[in-house]
Length: 300
Image (cartoon, rainbow, N blue to C red):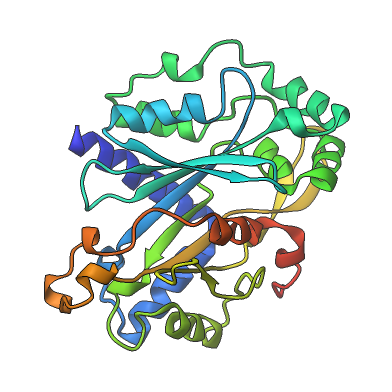
């Protein structure tokens, strides 16, 4: 099962890198700087998916894939203003990334927005996970990259965007990988804090999400995160209209040692010694990496 899980994760990353030029751009900059020698030197802290909270879909459906692979559901998070629920999932092996799945509370949107969303998602008449072979990596990969409903009309996308940028992102992008996360704390000295790595990224011309500040810091000070701003992509809608929309982005995480392990030296530190889980306050601002207020900061 581990081999299948790793293959699914590898295929996800392959398609994500093809779709998000910043990923390879950042890795190339890190190699040129001598921070890493190749992409495999980077630890993936976590990957994230966005979903619609409607019957047969949402978290309860998508999590079945990763539960089959041995991932375990952990803490629940609620984002009141963005109308989102989320859980994170611990991997079956420490070499694998954590997973974060969020879900839009569709029932809390306006009647018009709900109607638009259901006009698409109601095309799903059974739990789509039941139709795939979870033991076959190619089947899982194909599912995660196929449309679950028809291509949206531009007018519907824009109406949803006016009320919920999250809803607009999902209605077009479906289950595309929303982001992956570089574990900054495992990089060489001089680059192994978010402050240092952010400085490196900005010097190389990458645009950072400034919502809540470039560094998002947990209440206990042990989880520090940042992210790029999603690149704008030309998207073709149902009526042939082409419109620029936000794609995916790259996140960065610094997990500091838990107080009881503060005495450990670098050679003896393992993942379990560092701050685990997530922080709602941090994640709330990271979500905005695809929001227009942030994407407008990106040049070009």
